[in-house]
Length: 77
Image (tube, rainbow, N blue to C red; front, side, top):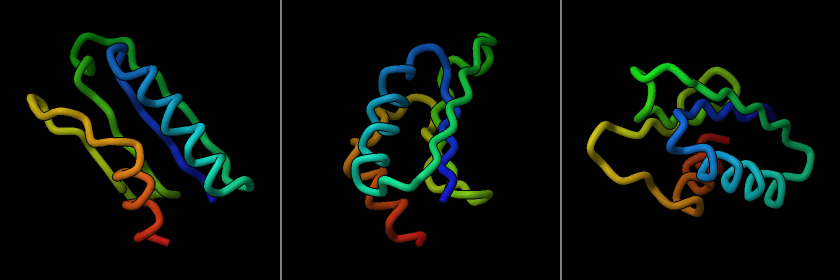
C-alpha cells in the first residue's frame, strides 16, 4: 500500500505525524512525502492511497485530525 502526502510548508509537521500514524497502523505501508515550496501551494495538504485522493484540505478550513484521516484511509481499503 502506498500513501502519498503532498503538503505546503505550513503542513510539514502534520504530514510527518500522519506518516508515522500510517506506519504504526500498517507497518508494511510505503509513505511518500512531497513537499511543495511554491507560495501557491502554501495551503496544500493532500493524502492519496495509491492513485485515489483520500483527503484534501480546503483553503480556509482547519486540517482534520490524524485519526480522522487514518480512518478515511481505512475506509478506502
